[in-house]
Amino acid sequence: MISKEHLETTAKVHDQQLHRRVDLLLRTGKVLVESMADSNRIVRNMKRTAAYLGIPEDKLHINVSFTMLMVNVSDGDYSFTKFQRIDTHGVNMNAITDISKLSWRAIENDYSLDQYEEELEKIRSKKRNYTPWQVAIGAGFACGGFCIQFGCDWMAFLYASIAAILGMRLRGLCNESGLNHYMGIAIAAFVSTMIAWASTLLPDTWTSTPWHPLLACALFIVPGVPLINFVDDMLDNYIQVGIVRAMNTLLMVTAMAFGIAFAVKLCNIADFFPTISMVPHHNYFEYAIAAAISAMGFSMIFNIQPRLLWVVAIGGIIAVCTRNFVNLGPSTDNIGLDMGLVIGSFAGATLVSLIAIKAVHWFHVPNHVLTIPSVIPMIPGVLMYRMLFGLININVKGVDEITPLMKAIESGINSGLVIMVIAIGVAIPNIFGRRYIARSKNKRLAEILKERKARGKFIEW
Image 1: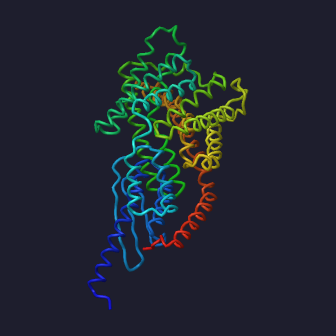
Image 2: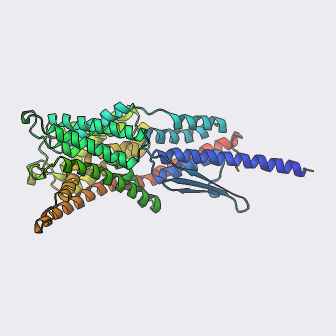
């Protein structure tokens, strides 16, 4: 007969094991949330990790929010719930990839809990692939690539890059000092704009496009990942998380606009946009180079593996050249379909996303690792700045204020539409393709778990 003390000891050990498993599951999810993974990916990876940990999916309940994770394990008679707070957020594509690989490797190689915890801690504490100055230089040249797409010459490309490099490094120092995140963005945008404005005081003979650097010098702040994740989450029915991501994006853009506007007013910069053409006048080869530079630069900000830089460079070229071909045409004396910027941006983002659905099997990385850096070079910076400068230069003395206000509204609507279709273009093929990918992954997972049970390595809670 089993004694009461033995039953109590067994129940206590059982509880301790369950507590540890749920703790490991939450810590896994925390790395994903902190690395800015979309909610669907967070849940999928946590469920696969739970399968490794022996927690049945029908007994598992996961709730994801922007600042908190909750896991509940319940079978009707017994229920255990634990929370995990999320304190920081920063795009880390390398960590997202490593967590995905770890969840599969742990099942296939029968990791012990100690082994899994050790590997998880290595991922959490792993140094980023690039030093702060390498990231700043990459971000700077990415903004220079934007400047080329907006129509500047290569000397202005250099001006924009220098301003962005210094601004990006300053933003990093602000974050390291513990300064408020949004204040750091405003300061970085202000300093970048000031440096870009200072470049306009240099001799006119050096560049024929002296004002273009002001359009691109602060675009390293553009929150492309939160924006695309917002659309992903809304389409995947993670409404609350999506709304929070959208609000975070809005606050970042607001902080960026505040820093730029303060610099514009301080330097008394006039509205120079009427003199800047919206029609691209570089050839496709130059745009391809600029897109590749921008894609690789943002990849460094997102901490993508160095081996993938050439891949996202090609993705950026495909996205931008497709956008330009669909957008431009006879009306602008260019080769193309002449269907407009919105349709062109949607076509570029969708094509890259469709290619990435297949490419993830070639390079063994999540879809967004390839797609997001590739579509970032299509961000409509000129339209965003036209809106901002239109609002700043509104004349408050009478009816003259109507014209700049209407132009600002028009530019704002167009830029919002372009950004939205880029995000949707990335999200929709991924969502539809995910069903087919999920089938094969679920089949593979079931086979691996069956083999693991046969080896006697699988203990279900």
